[in-house]
Amino acid sequence: MTKKTQILCIFAPVEAHKSIAELHIIAFTHRNLSVNEIGELHIDENFQQERLTQLKEKMGLKELLFLSTCNRVEFMFTTSQSISTSFLDSFFQELYPDFSKEKFEHFAKVGNVFHGMAAVNHTLSVASSLDSMIVGEREIITQVRNAYENARKMKLSGDFIRILIRHTIETAKKVYTETSIATRPVSIVSLAYHKLKELDVPLDARILIVGAGVTNTNMTRFLKKHGFTNFNVFNRTPAKAIKLAEDINGNGHSLTQLNTFNKGFDIILTCTGAEEHIITPEIYTQLAQGETGNKIVVDLAIPQDLAPEIKEKNNLTHISIELLQQISNENLKARTKEVIHVEEILSEAITEFEFIHHNRSVEIAMREVPKKVKQIKMIAMEEVFHNELNELDENSREVLEKIVGYMEKKYMSMPMLMAKEILLKEHPKSFRSNNK
Image (tube, rainbow, N blue to C red; front, side):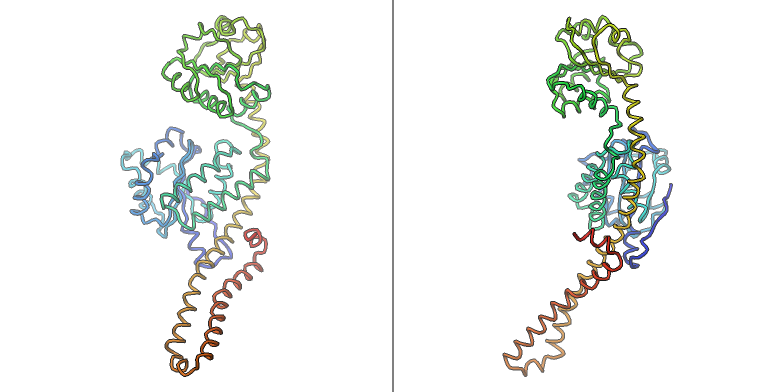
């Protein structure tokens, strides 16, 4: 497996180093697997509690988080164990017992393993979309947040992952706020919708959906989400047309019914895998029902579903896949220029996380101070100075207890105050930004 370089904090104490070094991530992404292969690693939500809890217990993991998207499956966990080949073998055999030996060896070969601060850096890059299939797509930040909430509810995560994910979400928000990495859409679905929005299409526009594949499914659900209401779906397999139509509160039809449909249209959204033109001049005339006003055809098929001569002889606005791809490429170039700015933010965020973790380590260590102070007080008053205290009158004893109580409170708070003063002197910028 590919192992990324481990970067360690240069100013935290040994114990803090050790805790960060216990962080590991195993990642399977679009960079080395197909979407279908990644899908094989998905764990149904109904079975995540049982399988992940069992994995955590049997592998002796301290914390665990499972992230699964359409093009990414990742396991974030903390353990003091060495991440050896045998550890990874046991990890996946426990999690995917039904995998064949060949399949297991394939996944083991293509997975990426990150350790320590390299894992922190990877997490920040993922949530900020630098590691996404489409750089700048904001959906990943929600997916990371939901993955953490699921881990928390299932009692798989703990203090370390909580702090890391909180810092990750804050950093990603900063990236999307302070850079233009997400301002220009690059996905075909987003671009097609933006084009329709530019044309000021009314929400009750009559929309014909030709094809019920992934692209049209995503597009129609996007349209429904933004308020469009009037859909008729046509597909070669009627059952798929009906299923998509039910999802968007529309009507489903067989593709053969296109040449008899008589309710008119304002927009045709078409994307099929046909080698010939699905919408011929004759079918277009039938669909138009004699209406001569401007129509819109969004043709996302390759080759095009719309016969070329229709554009020449009819009043229509044609939005083609070639046009959208050209816009996408231009926007992607603009986003790429923002990557440098994003990387600067992530570099600063890594340093901040080192400080946050160091500060948290101090806080945890200081939890023992009150216990120790109370123990010293108890021993002093009940054992060491027991006889002397018994010789004091009531007023003297009351004054002494007030003095000791005052000193006890001061000794409890003083170490933390001193630690924060030291941190402030060593890392003033990070301290102030994390204590607002």
